[in-house]
Length: 218
Image 1: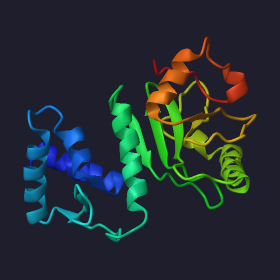
Image 2: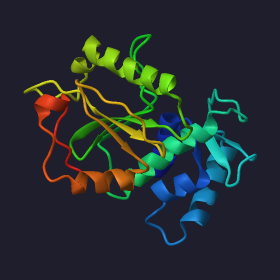
Image 3: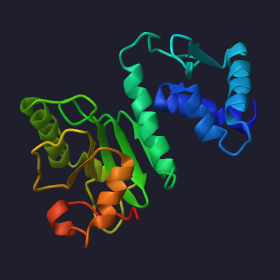
């Protein structure tokens, strides 16, 4: 296998699954016919047994060879949404970290995504279905519990000078009445919308109020 083959497999393991178009955009964006090149490479890797696929989707959806996700799993569209967030970030600049379904201890928040983007740590919730008040408040309560646990302080990405808690970004078309005295919460319909919101801020929110660090997205 070549370097690109390995990178595709690594991304499939990270994201759990990816569509053909995801792979073409991320790994073949520099070739003249990215779809054709992606199809050729993915077919070869599939025939070699290095990856798995589902033909129930158009375009096909690909998985790691040792995939544990059922090919009719209801989570597949959710995982593909997480890849979409990554692709949207790449349109601006590549995240230095991008982890999917981050888990801490039982009862604490389980972010869909943890990313470090342009120097700023973010917990991202991709909320495409509408939550009721109880559901969204329960989610925020879990983030408050994660903040109080101080487990995030032990992460290897933490600055040496001071410990920070990531900004919580909720990607949603529904605006929720949520807030925290311990960390910043932002809501946007998309990554592009989030970038516009940050750019429109006249000055950064003081660190003392948010518990986070200055966003440097623009």
